[in-house]
Image 1 (cartoon, rainbow, N blue to C red):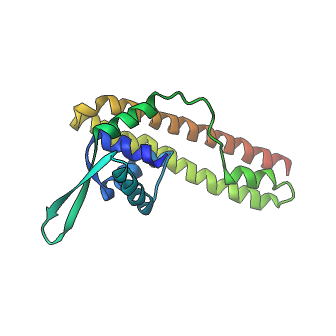
Image 2: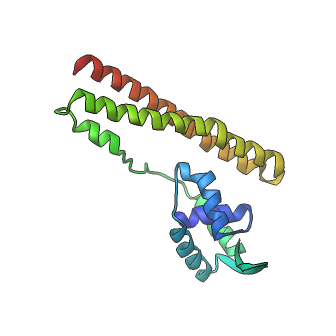
Length: 183
């Protein structure tokens, strides 16, 4: 899947591996993340497949910068992937749910501490979606009008993340209350 994250990113504009990592960290990392080493490995594969090309850009006092650009074949490969219907649900894994599922014999204080930690984490994620992520999308719409339709889809994924996190917070609140009243 990382291959399509990279092709989709390069479909917006040419970028270096470092730029791609920054772009992913500010956008898709909320639902699809990657380490820099994975990015570079995948870029090499995409280049060998002829889906991207790499050019060196000279920099003063620094090594040449390698900038990747999607090829017409890469754009077509990406478009073909986008057009394929997705007919299944990705498996969902959540460590907290696993711990809660098996914590019936645990001390009430320990369970509540774990739930409180997660509540704080998820509250920060909601705030990030509402401020930082929304701001990045708004700036893109303002400063890069050619990416307007992309930014609209980015907003749709941001909104999904916000709604999902608010639902997670609601579940945490309900679970905290249930443990407080019944343990």
